[in-house]
Length: 382
Image (cartoon, rainbow, N blue to C red; front, side, top):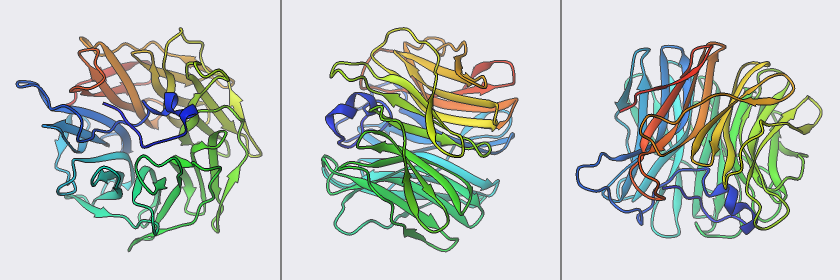
């Protein structure tokens, strides 16, 4: 069900579950079962209009998945995929307005090649384009996007020679209203992967991901990207949000022992440095991971992920993160949340997937949960 291109061995345990994808090796759905659907990213230009993106699988082929919330219900939206690709999927979405949204991801093209893609919503339909790729690198993927204005977007990901390559470098691209162009970004060690980005404006952005020693954070000051020091924790950072001068990042850390289970990780930028913030105590489980973060205000933030086979939601309490009561959907044996977006203090959405059976591969159901200011509840999706 879930796979990521090759990473250093110390990070595999953490990142193997962080990015849903389906390859040509994924078994087809059994007769009578619906297509497998996974939602990864969500964005809401307003409370009555939200977009969620991901992938849907049928007959061993993955295609892009886009769903829309109109204030009453979620519905499927037509979305293009790359012709001939056994796996085309979207990982992130951002909207500068109701009539201007971008989603990014990648398409696999053979065993060792994948190309970065973007899809644009103009108020009527989604259209697909292939993004520029660095020379000599054939395994390129986009994982995060943020659009600070109607004619400005930043997209981040990773570029490598092959899907299974042990080396990789950050991939950063900028939309200026007419075209996407590559922007240089520094690498940390032999493998660097950017997974999420947030921009206050076009000249002030943070991107986070995985570097040589764990979490990687890079800042754009309007002229260049530069690496900011982060605590050495192993693992990596998968979500970032800046509600003010502070920023929050979430992901997972790896213990010093080879068999250590991944643990939830949250970090905070106070305007001068990144430091670890305490996350909620969790029961022992093989997987304890945070995968997205969003804030309505500097003191109203949520981070989402999974603990064991259960979806996980934590809320920022001013000095630490506290776990909220959150149940898997009725009838689901496992669930996880990948992305979260807060429109206001009383309106947030979290998206992911759930499974009726405990299986590594197989059809999943898209999962959407809504915060109304008092509690989270599951909302039906197609």
